[in-house]
Length: 226
Image (cartoon, rainbow, N blue to C red; front, top):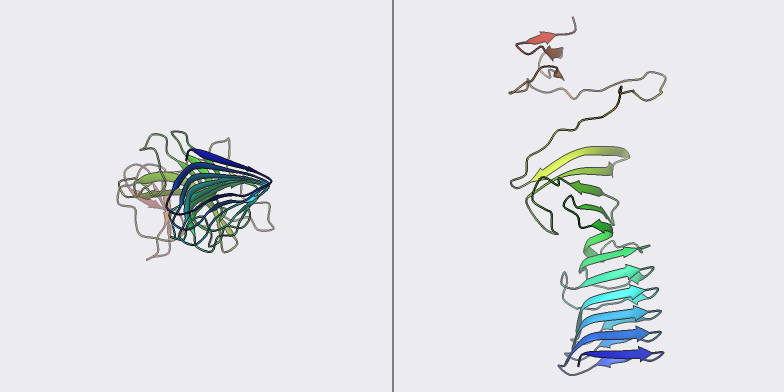
């Protein structure tokens, strides 16, 4: 069957048949027995699969996504002011004004801009922006270059990350000056380490062995402190 519409009534499939689109307008969209619904659309209702039925993708507006597939990490759900109440994690859940997706989706997204420089905000609050000059990012790709903004133990982290064939890129802060926070004792902290292997003029680093600060003048490292 191509499509079925339930207006204040249920749309249900049975046996081993396949329904391309099931609409539920204040009525449930349910795949039962061994039936298969490719797309389930629920408005003020819910989408669910019982027994061995399954739904590939569920689109939801002000309704509830229940278990649409009993196999974890397979189906996808799209939300608009809805709730996800599945008991096994879906592959992907996208939406606007989402409920907590912890344990509900392998990849849960509040926002996704599918541009050459893909930008998304995941359900865990992590923001990623992918390098548009590198290979366009797709879900699950192991090769990537991106900037990331996230909270880690009450510390805001902002920087670059890379995976696979991607290269870890630098961060350049634009503006006339870089100011420290307006604290009683403003500070800038350098993490001590070993001498950079390929220095360029202007680099400053803190040596973790002798505990001194160094500046690279283009030819050699100059110690800055006594």
